[in-house]
Amino acid sequence: MATLSTYSIRPFHCLLVALLLLAACKKEEVVVRPNNQAPDYAGVPTVVVQNYVNRLFIDLLGREPVDAEMNTEVGALESAGLSVAARVALVNKLMTSTAFVEGDSSYKQAYYQRQYEAFKARFLEGVSDEVIDGYIDNAAQAALADSLGGNGQGASENKSALQKLLRLKNSRTDFRDGLISVNEVVKRMLFNAVYDEINMNSFNFVNASFDNLLFRFPTNAEFAASYSMVDGNSSAILFGQSAQNKGGYLDILVNSAEGHEGLVRLNYRAFLGREPSTYEAYQMTSAFQVDHDLQRMQRTILTGDEYAGLSNTNN
Image (tube, rainbow, N blue to C red):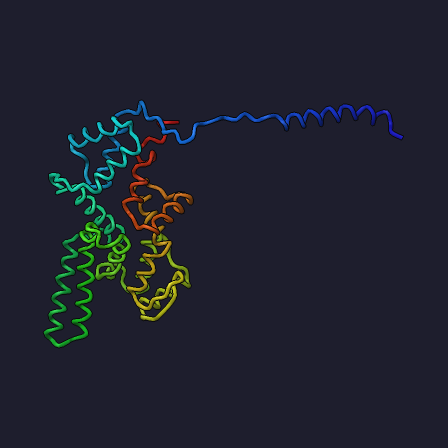
């Protein structure tokens, strides 16, 4: 038989449960935001636009714009309301315009020179073309001396070294003229006597090529396979691909998914000073693996609000 205290507590308990259920069922306020609406950049100070133009010229051409260029490009961006389309037009102009520009020859020429120098800075410690020319002269003289001296093997090796150095030197114009992809540019940066001297012996070469392109060192298994190819001309499997010499090893490395992601990371670091997020890396790398289009990848970064300094103007 229930006590009096039990009957006294039950009504209060039921009331408390009812109030809690009512609170739980309360309708949340829904904030409706317009979809696909272009951000409003009205009121962005001109100095912000000037900074964006200045930054683009430095990052893409290696120099600041002259006053006439600054006035023209700032005016065009502001007239278009700082739209993404206007930013794309400016970036494309700096990458591809062949119109004569005093001092640069053309924006396109300056852009590809800038890319060439940036790759040399990453992979070859920024070595100058004059130094590369010295390596070329030495290889040519050594090949000639071996040939005249009847040393066929030495002549062949020095001719091979000479061709790699010439391909390195020509990577700027070959890339500019669409004869090679950016993957081949990277391979040429790694496959020459200059890189070999910076990273002497096969042990250092394998570790350095991983670190320079993938931003990490190889695992023990990856190192063993890579070393077999590079040092022993032995067939091995790396990233699911088989090769048996140094050139084959580099083909695997630069064309791997991680190799493509490495170039994405390199550009995020160069232009935004940070690593891409997991989502950014996935999205950008997925597209880059398909088209190998360095300009498209760079354009995506360079026309974004973060790079343009507009991230906080439309909040």
